Structure formats: structure tokens, C-alpha cells
Length: 97
Image 1: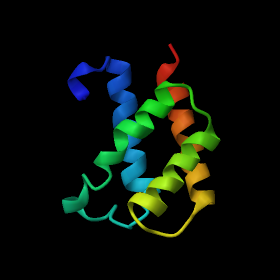
Image 2: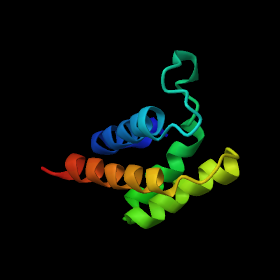
Image 3: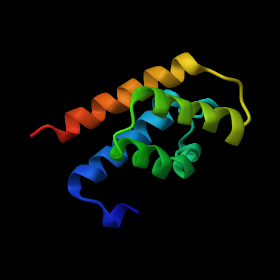
Image 4: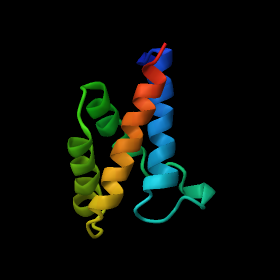
């Protein structure tokens, strides 16, 4: 996917990757270098939501669905909402001229 993106989209994609790995990190692998790609499968979905103009609620719901259904962990909606808001802030920061 990376080769098809504009420079701004590449930066957004990279920021999403970092936020999911280091901050969202529902399984607690942020400190393990060997697990750096643990959340790569979810990057395109979150990136697509951000590019489509999704709001914090929709992004948070996506993160909650990933952590509960795909990963099989408990619900942490507060964390997911905070991460969604952070991702929207990054998108706004990157999009500014």
C-alpha cells in the first residue's frame, strides 16, 4: 500500500502505525522489538476511516471491534476513544499547509 500513497498520506499512515503500536497497544507489545508489526493488519482499515472523514466515535468503535473481536480482548472504550481523537489530531496536523 505504501508505494501508492502521496507523501502526506505516507506520513499519516506512518503516524497511525506508531500510534497503534506504541499507544493503543491492547496486547502490551510496545516494548518488544520483535512485535513491531503486530498491528499491521489493522492499519489499512484505520487509515481508510481517517481518509474517509470518519469521526472519533466511528474510529473508536473500529478499534474496540478490533480489540474485542479480532484480538479477543476485553472492551476498553475510553482508551479507544482517546486514541481515535489522537489519530484525528495527527490527521489535522499533517493536512495543514
